[in-house]
Length: 91
Image (cartoon, rainbow, N blue to C red; front, side, top):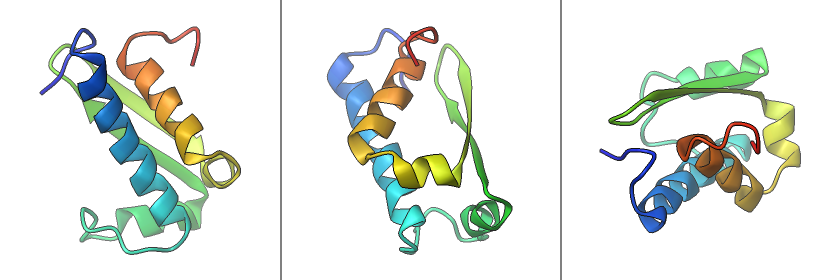
């Protein structure tokens, strides 16, 4: 588990993995960590909502799929990383 004070490389790797999964789902690729189809259901609803559990906090991320479609993987990763590091004003 990580905290907001974990090494940047560790947090960045996690944020990159989240962004990669979001973009893969947006492209219609199968997601291994979604056996119940919740991601597909969120695409149908038009809004993605998830929680990121860390040792020192829980982050709730909610964004429309249209935003995920229009945003690059690097930018999504940076957004998640800022949330993980407590930079809410910058996110």
